[in-house]
Length: 570
Image 1 (cartoon, one colour):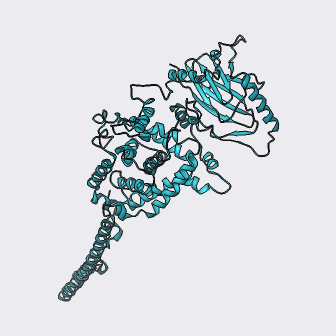
Image 2 (spheres, rainbow, N blue to C red; image 1 turned 135 degrees about the vertical axis):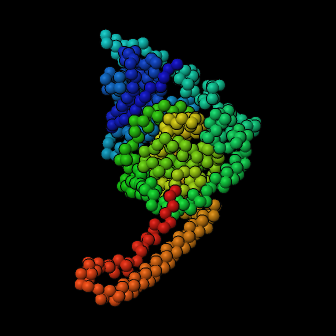
Image 3 (spheres, helix red, strand yellow; image 1 turned 30 degrees about the horizontal axis):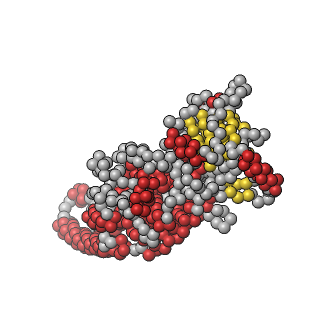
C-alpha cells in the first residue's frame, strides 16, 4: 500500500515549488503527472496526489524541472512547476490539507493576481494551454535516470477514466472517503452515518465531528475510564448528557478550594505568570491594523512550524461539502470549546505544555469529555460550560483567569483560520503523545476538525463566531455560572476583614500590657534604690554597673502585617 510522503509547497511569481521528502529510495524511479490543477507524484512506496488552486505547466514546458538532493532529509525532490498565469498568487498553499486530492468535486482555493504585473501574455498562454489540454487530457513526466533515460511512466489519466482511477488510487492509499473499513470505520463512517441521518434510520447515538461516529467510545470506556466522563457514551441522549454533566460539576465543585484560590492566588507565582503571559495571539492581536492583515501577522508570528506542516500533510483527504449551515455552526462552537481548553493550558504551562496537558484539556472541554454538543446560537452556553469546568477541575480555579481565557478564545477566533488551525494542531499533537488513550479523541474529533478548519471561507466563519462569542462573553457573569460564586467571595472578604480587626485588637491589648509591665518594673526599681541608699561606696559602685534598659521594657510587640493573615495556599 503506497504511503503519503511529507511535503511542503512554496511559490514565487513564476513557479510553484513542491518539495517532497522520500528518504532512502531510488529517485530515478520517481514519476510525475501534471494535469492542469492536478499534480500526482509517485516514487515507490510513496504516492502523493494534489489539487492546486490554479493551473501549472506540464513537463513539456522548458522551465519544468525536478531537482533531487540526497543529503536533505536523506532524500528530497523539489519540483519546479511553472505557473500558467505569471504573477498569479495561489492562496492557502500553507494549508496543506486543502490541497490533498479527494474524489468529491471541490471548489478550488482562491487565486489572485499580484497588482502591477501584466497578465495579458500569461492569459494567452493559459488559453493555449487550455486548448492543448483539451486535446491531451494529461501530461506525464519522470525523473531522468542516471543513464539519461526515463523511468517507466505511470498510466496517463484521461477524462473518461478519471473517476475510476481516482477511486482505485485512493483505495490503495487509504484516502478514499467511500472505501469501507471495518477497523474503526474512519473512511466509511461519515458517509454511512449521513445517509442514516437523512433516512431517519439511525438508532444509535452519534457523536464526534459532525456527529459522524458511533461504537467507538463505548468499547473503550472501561479501558480508558478517566478519559470519557459520560456513563454510557453510546446510549445517553444529548439532552441527558448536559443534565448529567452539570450535575457532576455541581458535585465536583469544591467551595473551600475556590475560596482558597480566591484568597491565595494573587500570591501564587503560577497564577501571576499565567495572568501576565503574552501569548502569540495577544501579540498578533496588538499588531493587526488596517494596513496589516491577519495573514501577515500570522507569518510574523512564525507561521506554521515544520511539525504543523507534517501534521497537515498527514491528515486524511476528504470533502466537507455535505455539511449544512447548522452543522458548520455546531462545529464552530465545538472548536471554541476546545480552544478554551488549549488557551487555559497554554497560560498554565507558559506555552510549553507538560505531562498533564492532555488530561487538563480533555477535562476542560465538555465536548471531549462528555461528547456534549452545542447548536447554533449557543455561544453563551459554550462559554458557560467551559468556565464552569475551569472552576471545578484544574490547578487554578479563579474567575479572573477564566475571564482572561475567554478573551483568548475571542482573539483566536477573530484572528482567523490559521490561528485556529495552529491551535487545533497543537492539541492534536498533545493527544497523539498522550498515554491515556487520548488518540481516540483525535480519531473522532481533532483529525477532521484540523482538516475542516482549513477550508475556503473559514476565515469569515471564525471571525463572525468571534464577534458572537465576544458578545456572549460580555454578558456572562458570576451569577449565570452558578456555584454561588459571589456569596463565597463575600464570605472570604468578610473573614479577611474580621481577622484583620482581630489582629488590630491583639496589637492594642499587647501594647497596653507592655506599658503596664513597664510602669510596674519602674516602681519596683525605685523602691530598691531607696532601700539601698545607705550601703557603702563599694556596694554602690557595683550597683552602678547595672543600668536597666527602660526602652526595652516599654517596647510593644511587633505588629503583624494584615496581608499575611489570610494567606491560604491552594
